Length: 352
Image 1 (cartoon, rainbow, N blue to C red):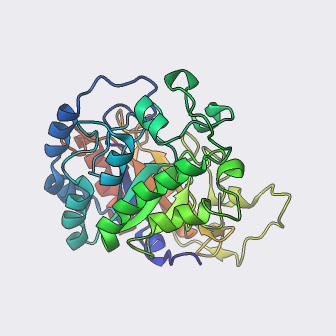
Image 2: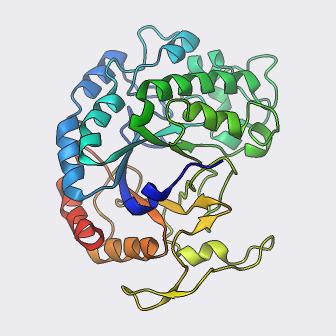
Image 3: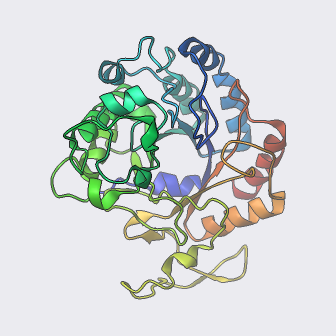
């Protein structure tokens, strides 16, 4: 019962932004007051970013709701009632709703990043949400010295999962059809937490994210996997985190002992002159998608590739029916730095 991914494939590529209270994948508790976070979110130039994304020709736009710090860029009453921070670490401004209002008339679809676990650096959130695994917490990127285990938590962290789904459902219902997709990070210990016939599981997680828009897309990140894999039959597209690698699409079909090598009808690419997989490739039923960064790492630095490589690699993936998301940094005001804005128009001219 997967959602239709035609629009996603036709978009070809989009922009992914880590807009966080701290650096992406940070392991240090940030020294930040809620009011400082609110001032930062209030200063986000939504119209300015929308103008840039339109100029760049982005087909869709991802933004992080939050990550390890426990600061989020949209209010959530369910989260606040469960966690009990006062003042709240969820922003007053609903930045996602404001982005939807600016991007939708421009034909740019809004998508969001969220984590599968509580914020790894927020002790109070971890404990009150009951996200204290009885197994090795490093499996989901947690640091055991940063929290006290809650007695009675089962292997599946059932109560946490129900709490987390409630948090996600509130956002999904509020944004409705304005939110077109979710990229869920950290679903690493899936065999224990999500691969169960009974809820909570992958199916109930996906249902919570789609509560406000059943046609929205979802992917669960298994970590950096090359070749790219489908992590669950309940995801619509592959998370495709490839980090420093730039695999070619056919890599996904080589060397798989459980399935025969299948390429579909070999066709000739007008752009490259080489044999390619016929359009609309899927991995175990999920639309092929990859995610990497234009800079040296998530949300930072200067462009690491010349325009020719970015254009050529994007066209190579698109020619085979794949989709690629390019991560890039923004300023505190949410604007794309000039070195990246100088590169994106070349991609637009080559693909639009």
